[in-house]
Length: 299
Image (cartoon, rainbow, N blue to C red; front, side, top):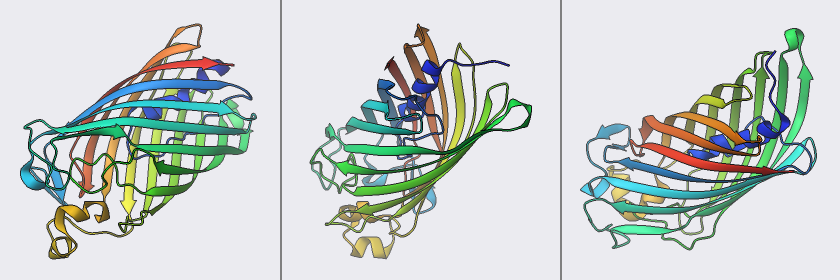
């Protein structure tokens, strides 16, 4: 049986976050009491193709050409106890039109700033050994994401929708004796913005991963299904204000995430890397992204 140190398990929680998407920040690993993980990452993504409704087009809304984003993220997780942890994350986002085209709503070709602060509590509900040294874990979490950067919500280059989101999620993880694991997660996101009707959403993910003392890696499918909203290009969208109503669109997507983490110094310091690509969507960009991160753990 291959084992993994308690120190490495703590830093695994960062790897999912390093790709930075609208996915929930949580997974099925738990730090020990008083263990703290601090991590930073840089992500770059770009797109031109865009889903107008469910139809893929070779341009984005308002034909602004290729749009790129650079994202610097700070993440922390602390083990309140062996069964309860808290997670905090905040990104700084810079988005621009590579052609220098002005956003029709914001009136600028580049927008940057602090986006949303996320705070979560995660609890272990069940953690039990099964036959053949396999293990089953169940957990739940709740949290809130708050816009703190004062950015403009409407617009093609907007770095967020300005919504305060309240999330509740549950997850199950099955791990074999050889450290191969499968993890399933489902979350509900309740979103509120006093100026826009932001659709609530269901968020799902399925993850297949493996780890040993030298590295950790996983592949994940992440899905968001908005429960209401407008389709870009419809008469309803035009009547609601066109580009000014972008926060009220129905945003759905299916993304593939590939991530790896490698400890490089005493299992307390390591590097992570990730790749994300969109496979399907609705009122969403056809983007791909890469990320690099540094992870440090203290206890």
